[in-house]
Length: 558
View 1 (cartoon, rainbow, N blue to C red):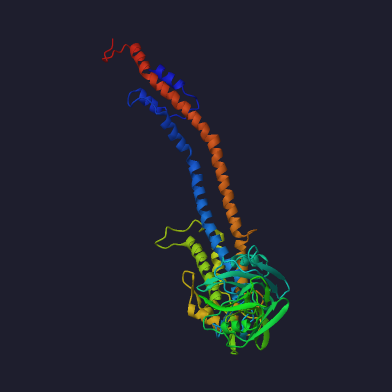
View 2 (spheres, rainbow, N blue to C red):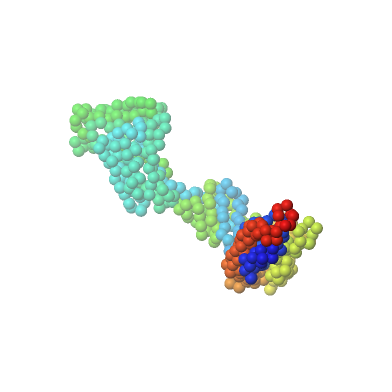
């Protein structure tokens, strides 16, 4: 027996950490022989990793601290952004609104920082575009008579367009395309209604400088037709000149005449043409044709004529008694910082425009500060929560940065504004209806704040900006900058320290795994495997011992 045990023991290394008592117990039959090598090694390695699990627990805490600290940092930076917005001459505290005593005639907007005050405006007339329209045609695609027209801008640019078969202006659609392609500062479109189609040409911009004119060449040919006038309508006072063979003849009309009367007057002249009054679905018209259908004549009327609908004009107004001309109905410069939007003539009536602080924008900015402050102080306070409903202190409870931040946030609210000159009705937060609760958060009484913004806007602004951007906003920003500074702020230092500690732990865990655990894995696997092999030999060795001792299988000795 002793030699078998000695043989078993000699199969293990002298540095073995295996508990051999279990092997001896197995050899005496008190338990089932055999070792689960994998389970035994895993159990031993788990125990060996106890320091590693402690380090990993530390990393979990560091991760929680990083998350909490980053949230507080973000909330604090939101406050500093609010304070920067409240500490600039072009921020929400300088926002302006303009009210109009007649908003259907004039409205206005004011740039940030515009001087408050009331101004008087009278709108004499609005700026307008120039427009012309052509004689009526049957459709947008009907072939136009042969003619030409010249469009001339007020600036002196011009272009001539030919109409008729084979020309760029074969139809109204073609003519519109040609005019738009000439880039003369006008827009040409074809308008169609129940009477037919017309070409409408409108200047692209308003103002007298955008005006233009259209002239059409006199008609020369053997048959000319006038534009239609509504059925029952009469002609105005005018004259028509017809030239045949170089001899001009002028026919004068008086107001109230009809095309039929004009036709009779022309026919009575006996100049070689025949005039006929006719009608169609669009009204009445006049046709003049050569008697022999061969001899051409010229009439001082175009084949396709244009009528001016409106001349382009500047807007005319007075501002505080000063006459103003504007090419558009959006007027800048008349009141420094104010843009006027002219909507209608005021017919000599004076309209009052009042420039004042924009209470809604200022209120929104202050309320945003309150919201962001409450978020930050709430996150900070949660780290020191000992209430019965909480799970205890937060992961940053022992961090001096957070304790200092809590004190800084609370102390900032005790600021008192003391103007360098004069007095103020807004020296503390409570004067604006902003109070501090027992939990450190702020609450806003909207009615009190709005009253302060309406009645004492300059005092509210002075509270935040001070006499030279040195008021509350600058004071609190400077205090918080020691935490939020990207170069050397407390948040950066804290987060950097946590990151360094976490990296060192990761390196320590990796080294522990590579150097110690891997080596133990090899040693333990070898030891437990050797022990398992030895245990498998025990039955044979026991039989040999029994034979040597003269023991039989029934337990009797020889």
